[in-house]
Each structure stands twice: as C-alpha cells, then as structure tokens.
Amino acid sequence: MRFINPKTDFAFKKIFGSSESKDILISFLNALVYNSELVIQDLEIIDPYLAPKVTGLKDTYLDVKAQLNTGEIVIIEMQVINVEAFTKRVLYNAAKTYSLQLDVGQGYRFLKPVIALTITDFIQFENTDSWISHFVFKEKNQNFNYSDNELELVFVELPKFQKSLEQLETLTDKWIYFMQSARTLETVPETLETVPQIQRAFQIANQTNLTREELDEVEKVELFLQDQRNAISFAESQARQEKAIEIARQLLNILDDQTISRTTGLSLEEIQNLKS
Image 1 (cartoon, rainbow, N blue to C red):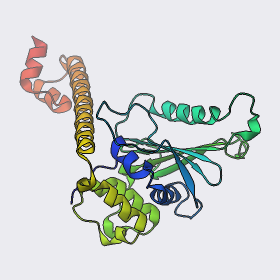
Image 2: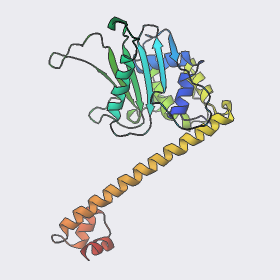
Image 3: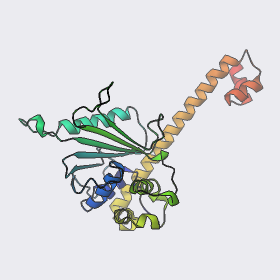
Image 4: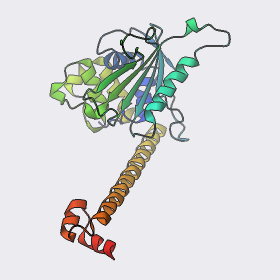
C-alpha cells in the first residue's frame, strides 16, 4: 500500500476534514490538544472537505475548522515550509476567527473560545525541546489567566518527536508518528492498528481509495512543495557563499591562502580570484 502524505494541506484536509472524519478528528484533537484525555465527545466540522477540481493550490490558510460540543471553535493548520512572519499569521487567523463569530447586534457574551492548533514540519521554537507547546493570555508578573483562555495557541513541532515505532505509548505519540511516517509506510503497523480512528485515517490516506482528480492534486502539491524546498535551499546556499566571500576578503591581508580556505570553505581558486 501507498499512503498520501498527511503533512500536505490537501491530504490533511481530506483525512481530518471530510464529512466522515468526525471520529478521526475527535481522537486527533484529544491527543494533541488535551494530552490524550477524552475531553471532546462530539464536534461539527465546518466547511468539510470536497473533492478538488484541480484548479490550484490551497486558497485558505485554515486546513480544518470545527466547533466542539463544549462550544470552543478549533482551527487547524498543517504547515510544511516555514515562511516569513508565520507566528503572526497564526495569531491573526486565531484573532480573526474569534472576532468574526458575532452577527450585527450580538453581544460579546456570545463569543466562544478559539483554539488554534498548528502542526509544523519544521522547528518553530528553538528554546524548548518539547514538541507540543500551549500559549494563553496570562498576567505578566503574577501568571494568572486573562478571562477563561478565550484564545489558545497550540503548536506541534513534528521534527522534535524522535520516538521509534516500538517506543510509542500514548495516543498522542501514535498520532504524531502517523503524521510523521504515514507517507513512508507500506503497511499499517500493529501498534497503530489498535486505535480504530488511526486505522481509518490510513484507509482514507490509501492512494487506491483516491479518485483520478485527487491523485492529480496529490502530485501537484508534492511538486509544488519540492520546488519551494529547492528555492529555499538555493537561497540559503547563496547566502552562505556570500558570507564566506565577505569573510575571505577581510582575511586576504592577514592569513595565507590555505588558512583562509580552511576557515571559509572557499577553494584556493576562489581565493585567488578574490585577490585579482
């Protein structure tokens, strides 16, 4: 079997945002937002996934949106590539979702809390080893909550999760492993089969269950992401080269060519060209 990559926006929305995905999404949110506790009993998926018409890539930053039976609104985004001001975008989408709840004339008491769950395929917070982080409004000096946590940001950083299949224990572990590894698996591991919702997620992700249009969309998204990664890699390479040249110029009248080469990584020919 081959499975579509749940880390792409198309696959994520199909697996977790389809009309038949409610029990999958409940299990997923209980695992990532509520630390495997069965807090959510029911929810309504808003604007559920529909099969694509292959007209373009994602036109919204929100992959899945749902309202819980407890009243909270959850918005979920899967982000594969880091982009400029990404944390601001997450906060903007959460604040916008919170503010757009009210119709004209409705009182503020009708506002429901918003939880923004963001899953990243890159490291967002270098100052912690934790792969799940929760942010809420608190008083700066005394650390008490502002209201009843009307706005909560939850980040899941996939690269920080290093557990092997044999080390998976909690529901949280198993869902994160699914997100990380489904694309590379050929069969459903027994450890994950024990969770019915994860087993159903694999069924939805199985390429044999996709239409021709959906397979076209999968290929298009994968190519787009690869192009983006290549562009970022090229830009970073260029920046490193320019920095090495800048350092080498400063050392030309101080060190010999061999030492400059070892220090900067530039070849002897490149250093000679700088001198000329």
